[in-house]
Length: 256
Image 1 (cartoon, rainbow, N blue to C red):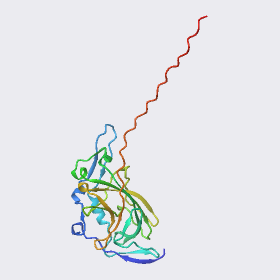
Image 2 (tube, rainbow, N blue to C red; image 1 turned 180 degrees about the vertical axis):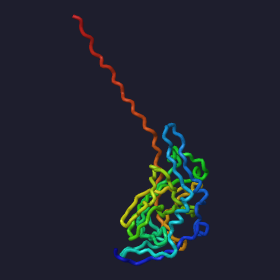
Image 3 (cartoon, rainbow, N blue to C red; image 1 turned 120 degrees about the vertical axis):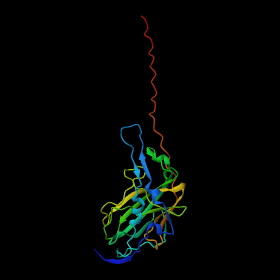
């Protein structure tokens, strides 16, 4: 492999030490459990959870304080503090563990708003869930560096109008409206991934951007743009009634 220049990254302090942005309370995120309810069938409804590690894992995959990542020659990193439009790629250093990092190309392709009715079949028994605004972000990730990473969440946060960092919801089962996947266990050079991230904004707060924030000291790279309206809820289709054919009236036979 060809060599390249190196970029040094400083680590993100613990969540409690952050001052520039507030973070959704870990207790609230840990309590976010969308449990399936009975729908009258024998099959259990799907359950989506934001586990106790959902927020902490996003923080723990931030760059390590003392490790350098090799950037391939000719690759230009996106400047910290850049504001991009949805659909524009950013080239960033990603270092989920000390001594293990690479260069990613991240693209927030589009964002649309969801609605509570999207989660029909789930039990929303927590105020955080019932009073949240739901957003779906379509994201592409490509490993354009020389390192192998994986087995961690996609390193993107939502940011709402209260300047709060929103970790993506972690699902334990497939959610068809926004299929969410973490990076595979081995995300090697040239590997790519398309996924969808679900963000819940407390108290129906408006999502203003999606952010890549490698360290507390670095200015985040953010994506902004028009957020699409929720997809209309589909009504169950009913079979169309076929018009009944009227019996043809044959002329009566003449008596001879």
